Length: 347
Image (cartoon, rainbow, N blue to C red):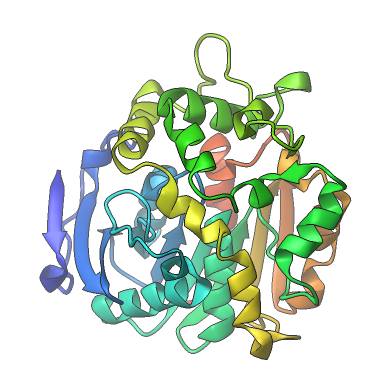
């Protein structure tokens, strides 16, 4: 594995030969101490900084097909494992995963990188962090891209109250994850089955009853909402890629990742000062037209009203036939949209 420490971040990187982008060892791996944790991140290329934040249950690795395209276009691309994921530290305390800490990690990362400006791009859970970072530190983050998850404004009620109303007596996954220990054990009981089922069911490859069922009944296991594909996985996720995900989650478990969801109400409680706040920097939304997470009326409404709380919204796109893993399912199209947006942003 190519590794570098934070003390070498100012050294120019030599041009890299063509590599297998499914090989996790084909990237430049770095570690840095920041905001009280040791963070693992990929650091490639030179030029204006772009930070890519993964969602759940993903890792830095979900961006493997974006890294090379952005580097070749003349950008410095930094891709961390967020706290609780992969090779980054996993603090024990639930409150260590609130949004103030997640944004603090990004601010600390910027300091380590000796950079003062970045476009921040987030998918799913990473979109929540990216949106908060852009809102709280517009001096550092000059542009925002959200993939698959239209992050809402703060709202008037606690998130769990709103989610309970949306679920109408059933259980939405954000609510299910509020439980301690049970979801962690269920997801970790067979990481390969869990990840095969989740990645497939939330994708555009799943149809009919194979698609992710967003709500489960009270007492029903969360994995009942997903269907494992029969036979080989769709071609957009190779066996090598799946093996990497499985190995990492087998090693780390799922608790760190789930703790972000357990901080939903806490985030709302500690951000009264953000009531009515919007992100004014240039922004872009990329989603999948076949993404099950956009099916609830409440979530679709957030997508339709994006420009009301992203007044700098340049474009919003739903990719046909694509589900919740847009960066992996339709890498070339996502790359085109990202490069178009970055070019419009200027250097």
